[in-house]
Image (cartoon, rainbow over all chains, first blue to last red; front, side, top):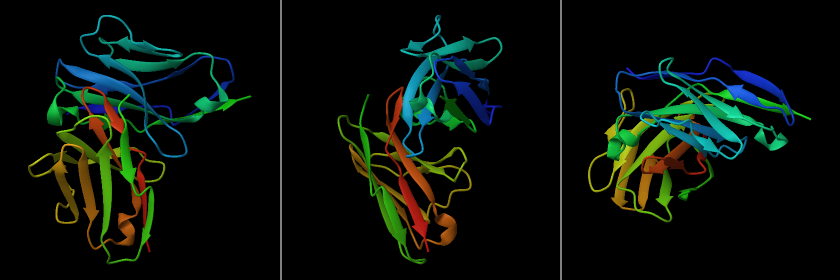
Length: 118
Length: 112
């Protein structure tokens, strides 16, 4: 069965520094997608970055990058130059199978609460 | 990214009443939408897959008679919590999209 593990319940980081949020996953399907979402206190889920299992390069989106290590089954999120507005809950999620219809459902990790300190 | 809306954003109701939550895809058509539930300081748990024009698919342990889902059009799915009780109080959030799922802003339900 698929599983997402986030072992860091909370993290502190100084403003302008980089931070890495850990995520490991388990699946027997060779085709899958990995996602990171940000959830501020307002509750909305904001899509940050996506990595497909067949993607050769690590995904990057602005200050966000995904350190994808397939053999280790890890998909860590790296936030560079942290800002105060980055303080939020961060969820790692996985879609199992090639996308389409019901396979677009996501399984979420337990989340990491990031606090950016001035 | 794609825009998904939810209404209402917050609802308070009495125990025993039913509450309907709407999820709309504003700039795209969605044959499939997903409903999640989130308890305070917890992760999102998938409740059901909403399929346009057919029955919803519920995850194990989710009562289909309790959480009625209707996906009558390509842009609208509704979740009705029937005979709500305090234990149904939670944050309900829907998603839609393709390979990347976009989430609505969520609905905070409080049952008194």
